[in-house]
Amino acid sequence: MECVVAEETMSVVLSGRVQGVGFRAWTRRWAEREGVRGWVRNCRDGTVEVHAAGPDEALNRFVEALQEGPRAARVRGLERRDEAGELPEEGFEIRF
Image (cartoon, rainbow, N blue to C red; front, top):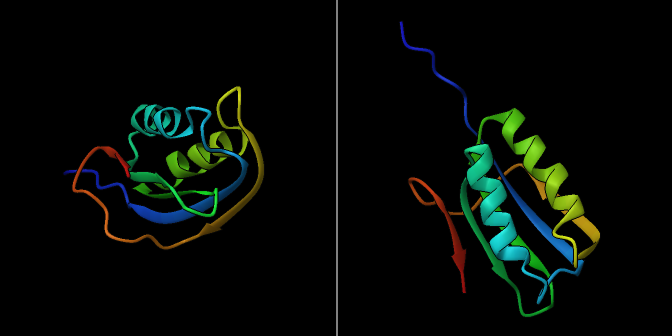
């Protein structure tokens, strides 16, 4: 019998000092480590947007990491929604 893990989706918008600090590359590394698929991009208003899917526990760990960000970042706000836009079939992309 095959064990099927339910997949959850989410989107996150991060504000603060989150651009120009390696946030997108750092986010991709964390997502790959947790087995999360999706994408990350900088927005014109200075925020970073993340859309992701994966097992619930992996997404929760991923969000905890996003709240901290890379060393040079200063995350001031995190808005999470339990929905996501179109996601890649596999992997985690940096979008421009």
